[in-house]
Length: 131
Ligand code: HEC
Image (cartoon, rainbow, N blue to C red; front, side, top):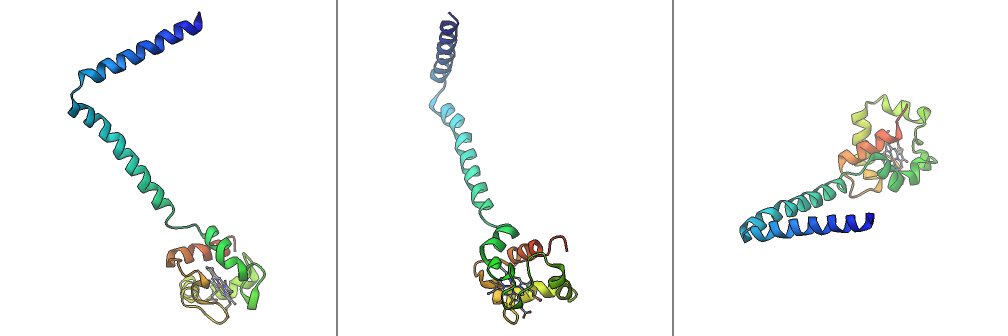
């Protein structure tokens, strides 16, 4: 019984919907459909934007971790205050510039060729977090 009532309700909704669709002209239907298409495009744009700038943790885990986790060639170790403090005394911007251009055993951009300056900055901030 309950199921039948549900079925009739569904049919009623379907009829109401198709009836109103028939009342509309082609232009009206197009106008109705259009916003849906726009929402879709906007969604796709948001997606590509979010795959743009990566987080500091992402960059660190992908590239910097190779040397900065265990201190290869004396690289300052991940979130190790003893290693980072003397370097940060030069000022964050200098340390950041050195990461971009390379210094000593530190290759330019830490071998992350497709990293933007801001992504490198985020990676450094991740490495010195809590120091
Ligand atoms: C091939 C190993 C290696 C990789 C990969 C690497 N580093 Fe380094 N990094 C070093 C070494 C070695 C030093 C110490 C350089 C020195 O002072 O002689 C260093 C130092 C640094 C410094 C301190 C610079 C200063 O002024 O004292 C920063 C900041 C830095 N790295 C950031 C990064 C970032 C960000 C990444 C990842 C995108 C990265 N590194 C990847 C080896 C590496």
